[in-house]
Length: 79
Image 1 (cartoon, rainbow, N blue to C red):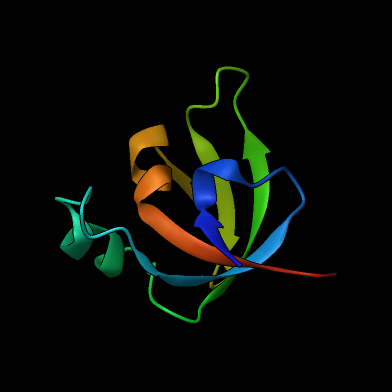
Image 2: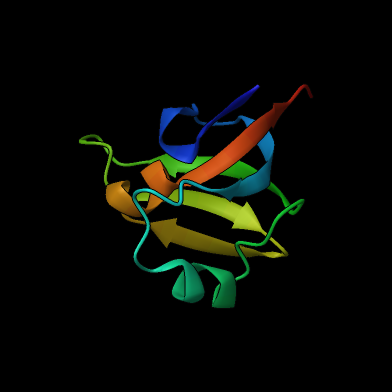
């Protein structure tokens, strides 16, 4: 089931499935940060107001703004 990264909880595992093309204007920047299809990640932290969201991807931690997280489509993986 595809959902946006914004809707995942802390500790959840997933893999990037793509981008919501209708909402994205910075796809190239996200791709350069390692947000590429089929890449596994883990949600490590979410700020109290939901912005930013920190994920662990490709051996580093990446903080994303709420609007960026809403455009990244993911598949949740069971631990």
